[in-house]
Length: 323
Image (cartoon, rainbow, N blue to C red; front, side, top):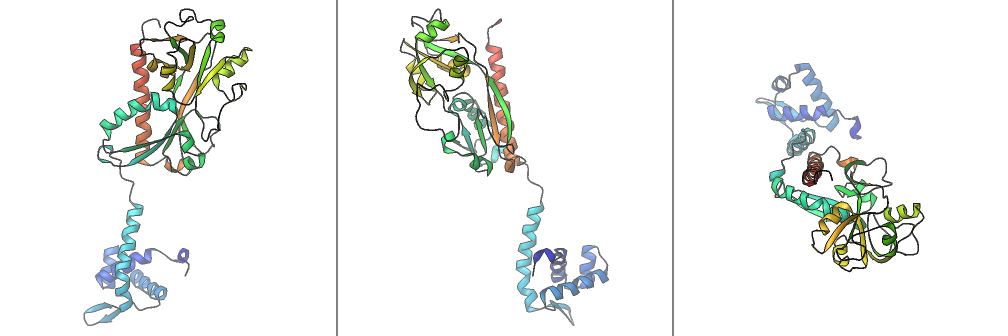
């Protein structure tokens, strides 16, 4: 029998009938008329091809088939009630949920530390599983296997939700005693050796070709627009590396400004503005429409937004006047 041809209300009728063992009491319990209840019993007998309830001296007695149905029916109706219950509010402090977040190395260096700090306070039982862009495909994100992707995106499917976390500029990181540290002109910049660092996409290809500017990213595209090209001698995919590599006095690392500020805490390193224009880039978070309305997921997105705003506010407050 096809389930889409069955009136599921009949299962509720049957459950009450088997408990009350009386058409009259069952009708009162359900708030319907006795004829309507009798008609329901008639339809149930046809559905199950069994009398279900037999009139006796003590009332209505369930048949063997009805007794077999009772525990299965209770379980089914309990599951249906759970299915129709409103989604419970997410309580982060008592949760042990695992959130899987794909984060670029840039996001891990700048956003994730304050996020983890906030998470340990708001939801100490929550587990965070951070994945790299090469660990995750767009399909993983679309299917909800990954809660969020935090990265710079260009061609996400239109079905994905996405929102901006913040924008960032670029700065140069170099040794304080580098010969061009006090006067970083475009000429000095081009004469220096450079550290390239980036890994933003999902499933990035293998290896880089220093002779091809295509695919090298914002910095080299900005140089190409003014007809220039820098000499890259080191390629790395980790934002922790430039701080160590820039200790060589002949090397310059051009990095997102928030990363460069973190690296410039080393007293041997200085931060300089780029001697040419590089457009800002936008860090975004993206997620599957399958997770959009889930309370736990909404809470996570709100926390990340709050953390990002806190970082921006702290930057503004710590910036010298007139800077």
